[in-house]
Length: 494
Image 1 (tube, rainbow, N blue to C red):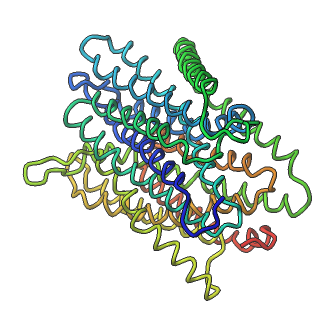
Image 2 (cartoon, rainbow, N blue to C red):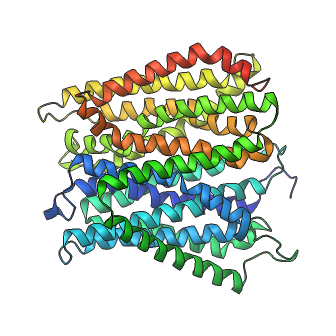
Image 3 (spheres, rainbow, N blue to C red):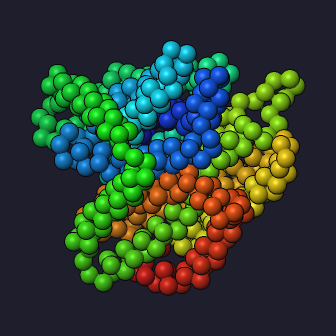
């Protein structure tokens, strides 16, 4: 490991690989609800809002749970590098299956197309679980824990994530909406393939990081046996997903709902058991209590934030005046506002926290969480006003959505990076990965709730955006009240 000021070349290899993977994921995500609700005559599925948002809920929820499995498989059996390749190949297959469900709109019946689509989503979920946690940890492997370049490396890597998140909706979104849905998903699949090919040709820059356990000391790149494992695992994951989707389709909806809930409880229970067995002493338990409280509030924030790909994506398509001089802005392009805002504000926030720290005014973690909630509340108050203006089929200015996304991004920056940093500081050292899995489960619950919230509130005749604004305001106030207790329970960690 080099001690010079510059970053290793491998960081930029991983930067580009992750950028293409995020291009693939966010390009697909921007099209998901638009494609499901598009009329059959337009090559979509003609689903109602509730059905489309439920699919979105299950998909985005599971995307945050499968990395727990992928991280464990990499650590225990395959090593991170092989697991990343497997995830990349499997996700590309998933995107091509989504594309096939669109391209075959005139040759297949709706039920067969929907099966193909769900098969594609299932493959994407499992592929993401293999890819996502392991590429990030390879970045960390290049640096010692106390290396001052480590934070900087993750900032560079995070820029790759956001660059991909901008390019995906921009290219795949425009192709899907303006040319044909299938070309949008197909371009997302090509993006994933480019990421894997780039990694293959640049693999020697990764040095020894991410190799399978017990690799010989002179090994730098994967060999023939490794590649046989990659192909075997990739095929096995696709085939086993097909079997699961087929069996799942035979189970009545009333039962599948409870199976999803039971599965989530099982995962949380398993994580809880491992944490219970591995946490020792009053200080560790006190800090774990803080993590659990903040994980609960994290669910609330993401249940609001993830309206972006669901109800707010549909609002862009149905209720926003997107005409500019005779040309219509694709609805999926509004998904770009968040990553662009992150690129603008993330470095400013990093500097701001350091400056505040220097004058002893840097807020403690619970206060930052509360501030994130307050910005979320403001964003959804504005969104409620826009929604009221759109009643009766009126088209509102696109600036409403721009303002909402920017305010939400400021809330995200108060809360999301802070939360990840908090886990590494508060979790017992031997349980950091498991507790990170628990933290990811709170994102999963938030994402699932985001997709289900509109239909749940509809039963009680409660308006969605004012409800979220009130919920975030209330949780922010509760956090402020609890913050002295939480600060004390962190046992000296800031």
